[in-house]
Each structure stands twice: as C-alpha cells, then as structure tokens.
Image (tube, rainbow, N blue to C red; front, side, top):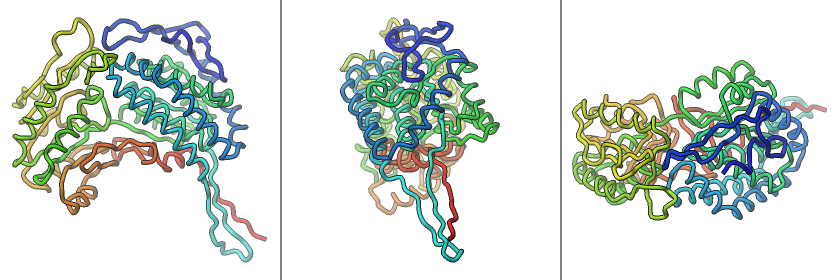
Length: 479
C-alpha cells in the first residue's frame, strides 16, 4: 500500500533519508498492511524549507488562480475515489459506506467549498479621523502552516486543514497519524496530480522527535493545527508559545444528548444509533452521555438495544458490514475498563459489554448499551471513544442542562424536541461549540466546526477556518 508513496517533500515522493520505515497494522487482521517511511529530523526541516520557498510565489497568485487549483484537486479526488475509499477502510477497519462518505462527500467538498471561498477574501475601509485619510484593513496569509491529524478520519481531517490553508495563500506541512498514513498519502497524491506547485504541500510521518519537534521549534512555521487529544493540545500550546505561533485545536469531547418528553422517539433513536456506533464510536462528536426524559427512558433503552443488536460487525471491506473494529488493542482494553467501572458502580449492561465473539483476530467490541450508571462513572464522566452508549433518565429540563454542562469539555451536544421554543432554549443552554437539534449532522465545509473549554479553540470549516489562516493588517493612509 505504501510502496508507491513515501514522504512527500518539494513535490516528490521519496523515502526517509536514512531509509527508516515502520509497519502499519490492520485493525481487522492485526497483520501489517505494509511499511510506511519514518522521517528523520532533516526530512522535516527540508519540508519546512520547501514550504517557505513555495509560499513566496503562491501568496502572490490571484484568489481566482488559487480557486482553479483547488477545483483541480477536487476533480482528481473524484477520479480516484474508489481507490481512496478502500485505503481508508483497510487502515481504519470502518465500513466502506462510511469511508465513501468521508472521501466523496466530506473530503472533496472541502476543496470545492474553499475554492469558491478563496474568491471572497476581502478587507474593509474605515472612515479615518485624519482629514483626507482613510483606514484600510486587509487580510494576508499567516505563513507556513503545520497540521497534525488523527487516525479516526484519516482523509477528511487533512482535507479540512489543507484546503483553507491553500485558499488563504499559505503553504503547509502535514503530519498525519502513523496508524493511517496511506489515506493521507493518496490525498496528497491527488494534490500532486492536480498540479499544485512543488513544495506548497508536504507530508512527513514518523516519530515525534523527528516530525513534531522540528515543526514546533521552527520560527518559519507560523500556524499549527491539531486534531487530537486534550493532553496533546495542551502540550502543543505550550510549545507554540516559544515562537508565538497561531494555533487552532480540535480536541476531545464527551457529547451529551438530551431526549425531551415531546421528542419524536423514532427520529431520536435512529439518529442516536447512527451517530454513536459510526466508526465503532471512535468519533470526537459521538453522543456519549444520553439523558432521556423519564417518561421515554425505558422505551428509548429498548429501542437502542434493538438497533445495537441488529448491527453487523466485521471487516469494513465487506459491503454488508455496518460496524468495524476499534483501531488497536489498547482501545479494547480501555473500553473493557470503562464497562467494568460502570458495573462496579451499579450500572446494568443491556446489551454487548465485551469483546465480540466469532473473530479469530481484530479489535472487535460489541455495540453496548448501559443504563443506571451514576454520573461519576467513567462511562458518563469521560469520553469513552468506543461503541458504548450510556443512557440515564432525567426529570426536568434544568436537571438535564446542569448535568450536560457538568464537564470540562464542550465540543458537541445534541437534543431532540418537537418544540421550536425548546429548540431555541437548548442552543442557548448547552455550553458547547456545536449543538445539533433533531440532527447529528454537524460537520460540513461551510460551517465552523470546533469546541469550547478543554475541547479546543479556533474553527475548521466555514469562513472562520479561512480567517484562522490569515493575519489582519491595518493601514492608516493620509494625504
């Protein structure tokens, strides 16, 4: 899978300078998919230099020329869609239908949307106090960017960092997860084939001291972007301070979901099951804490159990499979620990609760529904990043809001109600960067995606992401 690619530096695929590689394992078979290159520090430094050189010309391109280039990338991605989809499923184990949506809808759309948004970069003129003067406010590219992405969405996460950076006039160095480098590599190869100037987009993958450290230490890199854990984000912010880099962070979540007494139960159940068990629950915006009004609680639990039991587990490369494995053995162990903690606290496992049977290999965990867990149990108090849904009743709206907001993270939150007034109340009451009412569709190119509190800062998607890659310049012009 990786032999045709490698590191991508200054417009060319190449091995690491010392020839180093590291195996990438299938979460389904637990056998190697192949060996990916492992960059040296010198490789990463070369990528930064290449980006700096390329940006000096790219920033001078007209917005319309940049837009044409981004559309060309989207065209190439469309042409190679089926190849990319199979790479995503091979590396993550997720079902082909989910990989197809990730590439064909979420990832390609980033380049289409930012191609058009690039044409709409504009400043403003402000009346000046100086006689005959004016104040001009313009937007300029921030500089070379470094992007760090996670394994759970190995195509769309790089796409939504690269597309706005290019639209804004920036160059970028991408450091994807070492667990899923091939998905990023095929995206980068589409960028190469589309004719993006050499050095403008680079890819390095490998050990932290060889990839992360040089990017964070370099004064040439002016912006960093991370999709990852809160712990890593905190460290990155500390490291970014040394060279005063601009930063955007999409970090951990522990999304609450509230089902009010007037909710459409079928809509709530279908949406919850799809959002919770997608990618085996390994989604930062997946609903983890399900607060259901006491009048609907038992019916909701029964309905969610039925949907969980109906899911077909297996290799995501099988078109009939609906849920794949967890990414690695450690995730299995952590999920078992969360379930054991809930049981020790008095919770009940309504379905699932352990490793899936019938598999000779792979990190498969059963779709699990837990009830009667206290709020202090880890299944409610922490992001579990697994196919484990915890359902708990509430009596009144204020109780639900209090419990939903009792968290140091605030990425996404959801609610189900038929009342327009309650819907408006929910949006104001929930302390979260994103709120879905009767819907879990939060991620799209045109909308700002991101969280509050320990869930991060800045936004990906929407005009906000474009502005995150730009600096504001003020000029006082007087004659």
